[in-house]
Every structure is written in C-alpha cells, then in structure tokens.
Image 1 (cartoon, rainbow, N blue to C red):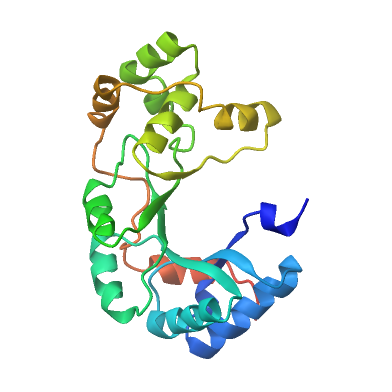
Image 2 (cartoon, rainbow, N blue to C red; image 1 turned 30 degrees about the vertical axis):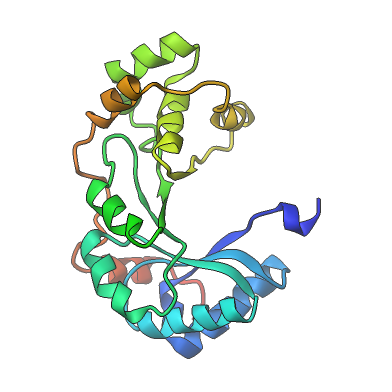
Amino acid sequence: MPREEIFITSKLWLQDYGYEAAKKGLETSLEKLGMDYIDLYLLHQLYGDVAGAWKALEEAKEDGVLKSIGVSNMTPKIWKEFLPQASTIPAVNQVECNPFFQQKELKALLAEHDVKIEAYQPLGSGNAAMLSHPAVTKIAEKYGKNAGQIVLRFELQEGLIILPRSTNPERIAGNIDLFDFELTEEEMNAIRAMDTGKGKHDPEAPGIAEMLLANYKIHD
C-alpha cells in the first residue's frame, strides 16, 4: 500500500516536553515508525514546557516532517491557557467524547478557530448504559444497525473525528459500516439529550501528569 494512502498519527510523550526534548522525541518517533514524515502529531496533554514543545512541532510542520499538529486532553480551561502560546492553531484536540459526555462547551470554543474534536472512547469504552439506552436502541432497531453504529453515526453527523478501538475483525467492519443511513434531526436531538456533561477522565485532576510519568516511562 502506498504511504500516501495511510494516515499515521503519533503523540509526543510527557517525558519529551520542552523545545530540544521535543525535537529529539519526534526523531525517535520517526525512527521507530520507519518513516520520513507523520500525518498528525499530538501533544499528549498540558504539562511542563508546553510552549517549547509546541514550537518544535510548529517548526517540524514548516519543514514538512509533520503534515499537521494537534493537542490532546485539553479541557476548555486548559485550551484557553494554551492558545496564547501557539503561533499555529492545532488541527485537532483529541479528547474523551461520546453521547454521555458531548463536550459542548469545548466544541464551541474550538469551532471559533475551526479546530476539530477527535473523539477517543466514542463508545464510552463499551459503556453498557450508553449502548442500552432507549434512545439508542430504538433508533438501532429502525435502521437495522447495532447500538454502537448508531452512536458512531451520531458522532459523525456532529462533526467529530471518531476513533473506535477494536481488535475484533467483525466489530472493526461494523464500525466503518456507517454510511448507508442518516439520522434525522429528531433522532439526533434524542441522543443529544443523553449528555451528562461528565466524563470518565479529568485532565485537570491534581497530579495526573506526574502519575502518568511515574507509571509510563518510554526511555530513561
């Protein structure tokens, strides 16, 4: 398969924040992938010298080593703190997003700069309450789809970039079988009403970055 037909995303880990460290971290990413460019490269979350790390990514984008750059785990508060440091507006913000946590405030803030939400855990990590919710199951029955497909179709129509994860070939096939139907506005509103405004993860939790660093080291 030609390289240009594959879209590769990678992330800069927290250990490699700061200008020089980020440049070295990117070089390591390229070496491990065996590639001379990456399609999308993300900052993992707010921690340490974010401004220096972002500057390194901006320069790599100018040099063509990175085709696009983005961020991850930025809440509305973190986004507002980060934005003044950026000469280049991120292409995406990768965050937890699903019908139970629709990120409405963040979505509005990002829309001001045409930044897309890339949703991880778009199915709520298989959240049984979400997938068995009457609003979802009723629509699934109508279209002859499973609950996960209804949730993913909703997210696509909301303008999200979705990242459903699976190692099961049948589920992977189902997760992309989303383009032969379209939800009505009434159905969209029924799922919008499921929003609780709360997610499973809190990127602003005290010590979260330090905990991640202590438990996940990718080099000395």
